[in-house]
Structures are given as structure tokens and as C-alpha cells.
Image (cartoon, rainbow, N blue to C red):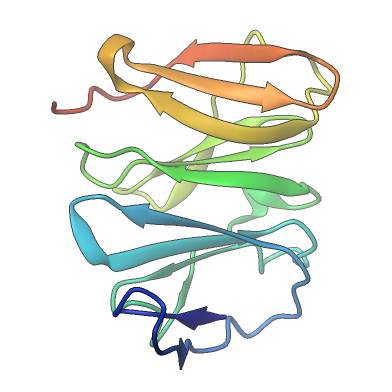
Length: 148
């Protein structure tokens, strides 16, 4: 992976995540330009989600057994919170609990095989909206309130 800090005129290679990945999704903290999260669809168990607090110079593995055997499709940082991050897989939506480091399944009400594709926050109504492959668009209440 590479990053640019000058609008794409020059590029700098980021540190390796330490796992072989062919598809990586990124999310950034809208209130801290140094914080980046990465997830992978093809990551092995124990190597699915990573956090960087220094623009990708180093990575911290945030994977737990809760995500084992899941094919992660998207990752989203919920701005205005104390570090709430969501990942969506083909079967579930998980929320990262910053205080424990665990991932909590928060997908009640979704079809079992949602085949998640993309997530977007709808901050006005505190909703998380998810597009799926062939299952329509779903929304759920965000677990934590976001500051405006």
C-alpha cells in the first residue's frame, strides 16, 4: 500500500501488514489523520483487521477469534465516538469495543447470508446503512451516539 500527503504528486510506501492480502479496505478516523484501519477479505484467521496510529508506518493487529472464518467486505470508523469501528462480512456486522479490544456481533435483524458489500454512516439519524449483493440495502441503529 502507498499513501500521498500532497494530493497524489508523490507517494510513499506504507509498512506491510505482515500478511498476504489481495483485497484491502481502509477506514480513517475523521478526527485524527494519523489513525488508519485496514481489513482484508482473504486474511487468514488472526490476520483480518489492523490499526495504525502513525499513518501506516506501523500496524497493530486487532483481529480476534470472533472474526475467524469471516470474509470481511468493508470497514468503517464511526466519527464522533471514542474509537468505534465496524466491519461487515458476508454473514454479520461486528463492532469493535475499544475498552476490551473485542469484536461484538451486532447484526441482529440482518439476513443470515447478507453478502455485505459497502457500509456508510447516516449520522443525522444515527444509522448504519449497508449495501449487499442481491439482498438490498439494510440499515441498523448505530450502537454509539456520534457527536455532530
